[in-house]
Amino acid sequence: MSLTRRKLLGAGAAMAGVAALGGWALWTGTAGESPLLLSARNDDAGQHYAVGYYLNGKRAFATPVAERCHAVARHPFLPVALYVGRRPARESYLIDLRDGRLLQTLHSQPDRHFYGHAVFHARGEWLYTTENDTREPGRGVLGRYRLDQASLRLTHDGEAATHGVGPHELAWMPDGESLVIGNGGIRTEGGSREEMNLDAMAPSLVIMSRHGELISKETLADAQSSIRHLDVAADGTVITGQQYHGPAYNSVPLLAIKRPGEAYQPFPVSRAQLAMMDQYTASIAIHSEQRQVAMTAPRGNRFFIWDLDSGDTLLDTPMSDCAGVGAVPGGFAVTSGQGKCRYYDSRTAEVQSQWLELPGGWWDNHLWLS
Image (cartoon, rainbow, N blue to C red):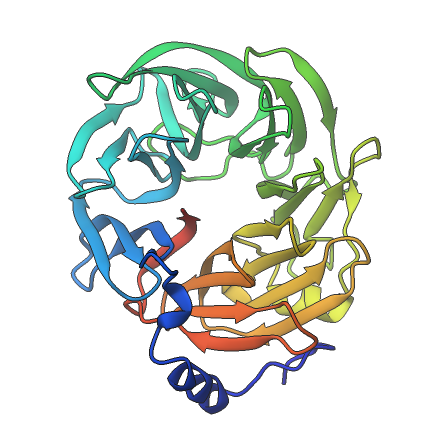
């Protein structure tokens, strides 16, 4: 049963609603546009792909890549995106979104590997990535790359410390010049995902300038809660999702919030919901217009939506191996590593669910919607 004040409609009712809309006309605007979903995906044979699918079900491209990717960094105005290699990847892939052509395989610097996330600056010239210094395992690095907009090639152009250990997701603050970074706090060797310091973790939420200057650094009470994924609302509110690496019997906050001018602190999540998360959160998405935050918990096969301001639960529902989540008009689109993808319309008192005509299964934990 869903634990929610907004009743999730049954699958049959959802499909009937889709039929009433005339197929997937929901995703087609007056000019025939449909949101483009960018994500990493595998096939049944284990081949890795950088993919683009329209939410009306049409495939834009599926480009084979050598390494498994994690998140996607979309250029602010050029039709390109970087599919970032999953930790501890040595490669990331710059893709032409018009036809899926591989423009460049971006290699990490010597003694560095990618941590799965990157962002382009709003002016389009600079890309920033989270990376690991393998000479000093776990030391967080913000890699800086310059994009030549004529040749569409990225070139390494320096780095700065992330002021923490094991940086993962990063995002722009509203000023467009400072970054918020989730330092996971876990040391790993080069080429390995083995966690070396679970008894001495040092996770932190850092806000820093894109040039490297530290603005703030905050921590949570439990040092074994690894700060991994995050999103930023239009007003500067930051939500983070944690992954707990302590004893299985402990119940610790797995969602946290930093409001502008306030301290970083746990977001109000019930103990029952924490138990269903199985100590692991994946993707976070904020819908700024509707003032809502959504989170996937794939190990617990659970998807959640909360009111960003009150903390009220808007949706708490089963979803098999839910993976990436992104805000779309009216609500959220959610992919799955095992099952079908869904759209949740969260505009009204009853959250409505509809299947998306996207391939089922093998989606990675993040998506980008443009």
